[in-house]
Length: 143
Image 1: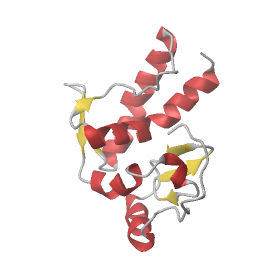
Image 2 (image 1 turned 180 degrees about the horizontal axis):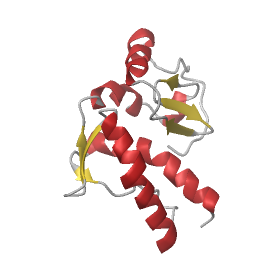
Image 3 (image 1 turned 120 degrees about the vertical axis):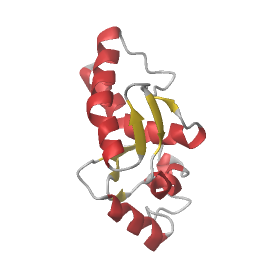
Image 4 (image 1 turned 180 degrees about the vertical axis):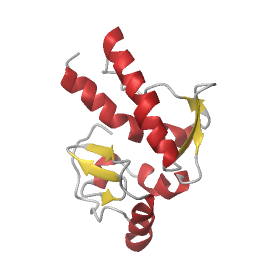
């Protein structure tokens, strides 16, 4: 697997994990992979390392998840409900999203831990649909 593919898998992890927590909380803190993503041992270790030491602590700091390293378990955090309206939208409908820690870019919703969560809540509250995308405004996406 190329470094570029590993980077794309890493970029997608925060959004995929939050979407997985919609249906299952608690859940294991393992990477969420699509059926067509086959990581070799080295690539999987790299994804896990980045997930456990950077991405999940960032999501926990922002209150989206509660990360228990001892049990390798994730639960919805206090700020989870703030992002739920976005999680319930098909990813392609989020084109144009740039709200707090989440931005739609090249078919993926990227997480930016350095952006304030309050901006996300304001965007969802002010605009109803956070991206302003129309029903007929779609692209194919990774999710």
